Every structure is written in structure tokens, then in C-alpha cells.
Image 1: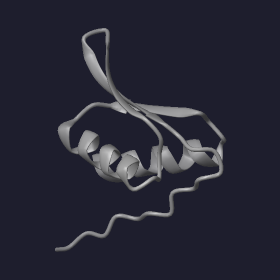
Image 2: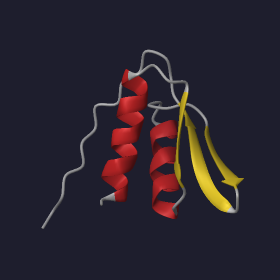
Image 3: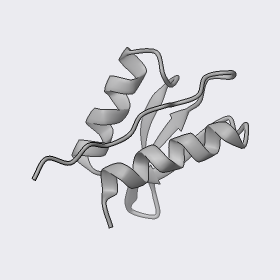
Length: 75
């Protein structure tokens, strides 16, 4: 499974379902991508939280904002 594509899909699906936030398992690359999305205004606050010894990233979603990104693979 592709963790970056999974992150983008979870964000898109949560936005379409009008959720306030989405939580994904933590990795440094996912955290970096989430912070770039925050900086560019696609999502709200990004927090790294530890739950049961496993870090997670909580991404607050913006109301009315819909992520239209796709991952392009170069082979």
C-alpha cells in the first residue's frame, strides 16, 4: 500500500463526508506533507499526538475546502 496516496485519499474522503478532522498513523513524510498542505491553506491545524504509544497525525479540515490532488509516480 502507498502511504502517501492513502493519506491524500483519507483527507479527500473526510472532506467529502464533511468531517471536522482526520487521523492517520504518523510518519515523517506524512507529517511533512500535512504541514505543506496546511501552509498552502488546504487544511487547518496539523497536530502530532501519541495514543497508546503509537503516534498519529490529526489534521483539522477546513469547511468548504476540497482537496483535488493526485499523486503522480515517475518510473
